[in-house]
Image 1 (cartoon, rainbow, N blue to C red):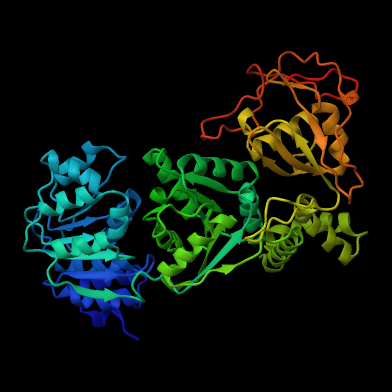
Image 2 (cartoon, one colour):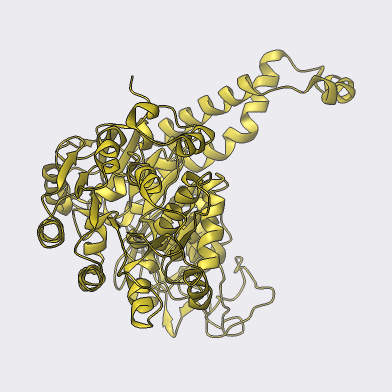
Length: 594
């Protein structure tokens, strides 16, 4: 097998990469480095993310520059600040034993004054995002007239993000006599235009087929009702106890909303999007890289350039607007030759997008079934048992406590101890998934739905126009009926009304506390839709269920999960803010006004 020594790299560079643990080059490195070390050839390299592209251009670049000179000789352009910062760190590591090497990063979202000071120190290499670099050029801070090398990393992403004019301006400032190395996962027309206009007879390196996806990624899609998207996400996460995922959403508001709901439901999750400050983004990424987070919920722009190893799943909560972006999303997993799973949660009207993506990545999707409640519980139980089996026991530290432990458990048999220990964690999942509905739908399936046994479907005359979504309606019912959140097993929020499924035993409680109450000046109506398994007839609840509508002090502001649909802050469910203790609306009390 070929090693780095045979590629022609210098001893200082070899020493640096040996410390980094590099042993054998990846295919893109093996093909690109010898060509680039020649120092007189433009190169177009097509390869997926996670294939070692930074080292493919970074190692020869460090070897070719004269670090005794104090002017900028190489410019690396990247689409995002995260990728820009990553490239800078890698180049600093590669040039560790090259005396006098100075690499600096220029990107938006950080102090421009500090970056100006760094540039004036005379770095030989600048890694930059296009927008901030144009600002520096217009200020007269950056001089590109003596550039010998230009690297365009993730060129297709820069063009997708609208940097075409910035790239044209930047490249026009560089000398004609230079080497241009272009790296891209796909080769759309705009990337071809840059190659034609700014490169001379480029040598092409292609790993795999052009525009194809990583062969180590399994592509799955789940078809669910749009309203069940979040429930499907939770079930996928629960079915994979060791999941380490990036969840892609379409908008900043949706990203924050999904992350907040995951956190509320007990998952180690956080959001990454453009509204966060650089300090906040750095904090989130630090937690994710250290695996303190189980799921990173991100927008496309925020997640571009994230280089995190061992991502097990990429989950498309929504498919991207630009179909080509799917390649970059899925490339966050299966990096450095490892395997990974890319999941798309879709509804039936999005099947055409799946077919379009298949044509682009030249890979087939497999339709999978959202796991049932039984499947999730089984998977969680197996995972818990494996943890118990593999845990390391510190005999010395635990020895002094064992007599008390043995004494407490001496009446229990071995089987009883195992059952009770496992149940401590397992009961939580069993309770939640006991009557979990089937979330799967066929492409031709309509919105009709049969409620599972032990659950009754109900109608309530509030919906989106009242500020509710599927999470906030569940919270509203649970809080005001004084029941568990999990007792509301399913919600379908329409514009002027909603359908819900609740455990049969709490139906009467919901009726007694909510039916007939005043919400924002109108009377709330709740009725059963009927369920043969539960033995409940489909009938409107009698008006004599209502109590006198005197209200309890004008309502209250609920803090539990109600969000406006544009992602902007908490939704007040009552006529006033504040709170204090509230009467839960027990039988015999006056009906509360919400």
